Image: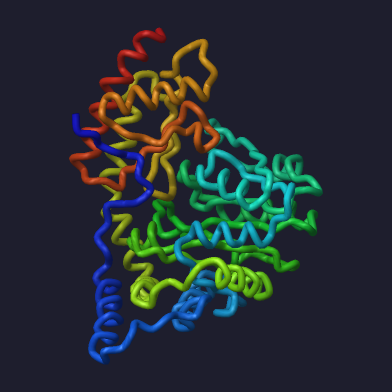
Length: 375
C-alpha cells in the first residue's frame, strides 16, 4: 500500500516567482562575469537584514535595526546557536507544551535542562500569568514560546503577551525566545503579534523565524534571528566559528520574499482554506468528537484522539500504538507524545486535496472500529 502523509512540516507550496527570479538573477550575474559566486558576510547580506528589520518596524517593533538581524542557515541552526550561547550546563529552559518536538533535543545538546509547562486543550491552551509565575524558578534561563504554536495552531494575542511579560519582568536572569516562523499562516481577524513589538526594558527578548513556512521557501535553508545587538554579535561569532553563511542566491530569494511577504502569505492562506475546512469537518464527524477550536494559525490541526487509545496502557505507549495502527493503514501522522501531548496527533493539511481525502478515509477506517470497542 502506498503511504500518504500528513506528517510533514513543509507545505506543498510552489516557490514564489519573485524569489525564483531573484535567485536566478544572482546566479546569472556570476556566470556573466565568469567569476566565483560571492560569499556573504556571516550575519547575512546587509540589504536582507535591513528588509527584515523594516518589516518588523512596520509590525510595530519601532526600534529594531539591521544590526539585530542575523541570517542563519535555516531556523534550527539559529535556535541552536542561540541556546548554545545563552545556556551553561544545568540551566533550565521552560517550554509550555504542546510544542515543537525539536526543542527537546536542541536544549539537551546545548547543555540545558528542559522543563515543560503542560497546557490544556479544554481551554484552548491558555497560558495564564499565574501558571507561568509558578513554573519559573531562579534557575530558569530561557522561556520558549511559539506563536502561532506548532502543533496546536494557537495564536497568542498582544494582550496575552503583555500579561505574560509582566511576569517575566520579575525574573532578571530570564530570556524570552519567541519562535514566529508560522506568523504569515493565520486565519484569525488580526495579524499575529510579534514579541519584538512588546516592551523589553532589559533587552532580553529574541525572535527566531525563517522562510520555509510562511514564505514558501522550504528547502532553501534560510532562517533569521533578531536579538539585542550584543547577543546578535555573539551568536554571529559562534556561527562564524561553527558554520557558514547562507549562499547569496538563497538570500536573494529570501529578500524578494520579504519584500512581498504579505502577498505571499495571503496567497498561501487562500490555498490552504479549503483543505483546512475539509479536515476540520472530517474530524468533527468522527465518533464522539469533542468540541474543537479551529486553529488560528499554521497549517496543522492537533486532533484529540485520546478516546481511541488502548485502555490500560500508559498514555505515551498507547499513543505510539495508535500511531503505528494509522501507519499500518497507510497514513503517516505526528504522534503528539513527541510534542508533550500523548493521544493527540498533528495533522498537516498543506497537502494536495486528493492526499488529504485519502488520508482522512484511512484514518476513519482505523478509528471507527476503535470507537465501537470503547462503548
